Length: 244
Image 1 (tube, rainbow, N blue to C red):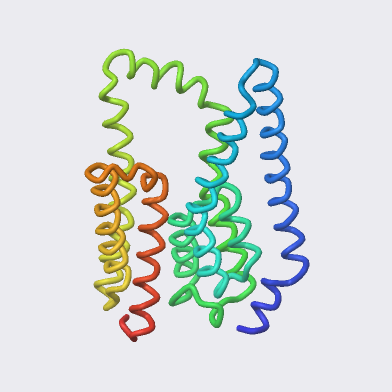
Image 2 (tube, rainbow, N blue to C red; image 1 turned 90 degrees about the vertical axis):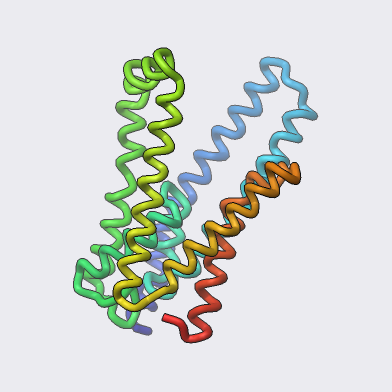
């Protein structure tokens, strides 16, 4: 395990992953500067623009806490650079953990654990995590405009309710996939995944109630991240208590 993690955390891995992350950061900075200059050009109030930048910064840092926890959680089995790369570009915490676990078990590992990891399995996991997530970006580049013009706009023009129905159906399907994984773990004798889902759902319901009933609008942007963090905390607590 120590030998594998030394390679996974080697300077070469940091360099490879760091170049990609720095490119994405540079691209974000480039468009931020262009947006600011365009705002000045069209005569927008600079005070409002600064307020928008400050608000965006605030609403970016807090939700990213869940992503940081995901990097920490995956770093114990995959090292730091790969989770850092995957969760810094297009990857999502929910997808990356499931994809890594499925790839590891498909390669013959009993769990996503560094002590069982080999170089071949590590490359396979990294490939699955990467290949599985890139298609959304590729489809958006080559087909989003056409799809919006010929499909989404037509649906919205005919009946705007269908757009909400399709989105909700897709989201519910995604949630059902995670619940299915939890029940699969339950059949194997592990209750942690199911408890995490229940805890996260309960806190999400609480935050939604606070936003709607108590008018705590500021909580709306942070509710998902807070629910994720609290769900992860419950997993840590259960594991510490020896619950499988």
